[in-house]
Image (tube, rainbow, N blue to C red; front, side):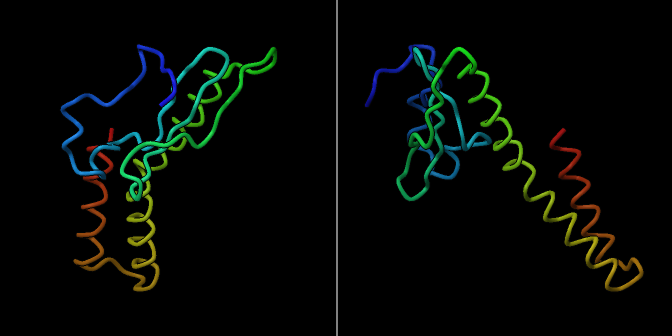
Length: 120
């Protein structure tokens, strides 16, 4: 394992006993900021842990910390909202196919709205 910044986002001892999918939590991608570069790490279920998937080197034109942070925030936001987006798509498709709102479509829409409200 390479040298890491002492302020890194290393997993606490409590989280090591948690099932792999839960270990990634709501941040499947994280940044490790090192001298001269930032690493982007992803949680790989098949490997049971995080692996570096990209290195963003610092340069005169590139702030590695800002670029890596931007990328990880974008991916993590997508991951958090992916199921909500898919649910909205399903409800809209059902509505358009039936051209009316029945109990089933109304129920599905309410479930999606609750998820959206909880995510705020």
